[in-house]
Image: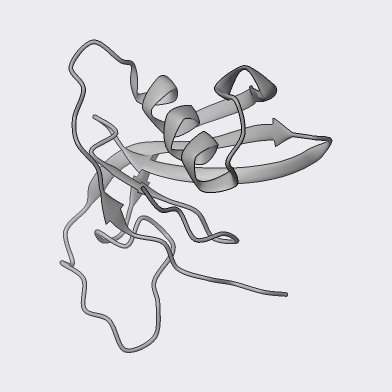
Length: 100
């Protein structure tokens, strides 16, 4: 199973919810219209560190409990998990590389 770490602080847009921020970042990464990306489910979680459950070998993370969300999106029939902190200022995905 391919497991790529994505940890990227993004610009906070105060008017967007954490779910909208994750959808927007996913849309940028996949070069899709955000309207094509559907949130299927979400759960509030506490990550063990700032990797948000997506640690990459050789990188350093703060070992601090980090509250956030695990979200499941559907894009073109595929399911993609996205992990965030509570505000959406940190977004990660265990399977794809998120980029601006």
